[in-house]
Image (cartoon, rainbow, N blue to C red; front, side):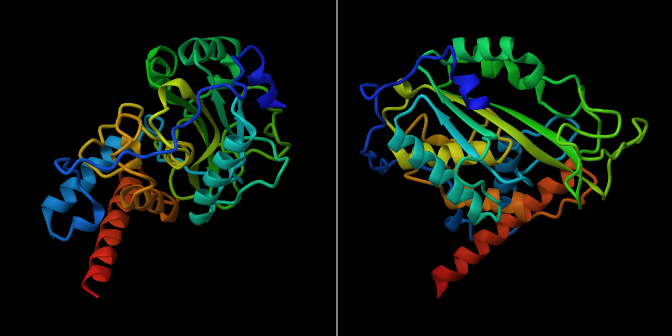
Length: 312
């Protein structure tokens, strides 16, 4: 099983390992951030805030549209205690289900892999070296190779790597043959629809689908976060293609919790609106710009709904 392969050679965390802190520090009164429910202004100021948030956070494969999960999500956790592992699995699965994403049954084969180690850089580099063919297939549009430096060389306590595919929207079938596929079948035995390489762009019948997410965390650098914050942070990273260098400090987002646990106690309205926009968007837009526009529109609608609730 893949998670067992990943676990081999990694530092195991036993019951004496550092645990995630159970207390969240209250926000500082002087801290300023944009909360979605505060965005009651109309016109360009609000639109600019939303556009900047989406542009900072979204990180699709260059030249491709934003990918999302179409297959059932199955979360696997390695090197954490049983209770915390199960909590992370359950919480991430619940967030996915709230978005309409199917989740795998107990015993399913993981496609969201979360690995804990106190040597994240070394493990990521070894992982990339030993499994390069799996993580960087010889195919265009599958990985964002620019993320490799962050995955293997950064000091980040949480790092991630995505694999996505171009698929036929209606069937979920892979649109391109991958290395190792038979001439007319993909790795799952399904017939492959071949799109001419000379096509200037993939239009309505095609979309981008998440296939694998690999996340490496260092619990020794995350003791300031509680279990809910960790789970919600991982949920956002697992379910959307998030830029590892996203600047969200000015926004009320769980993505800030790694640097400051007082920034957000859990998934925020910004985070939920972003994910909702990604998963409610039609997958027929012919461009990445069109899919981002839909997400921005969804965040604006979420702000309007919150404003209306406050008035009532």
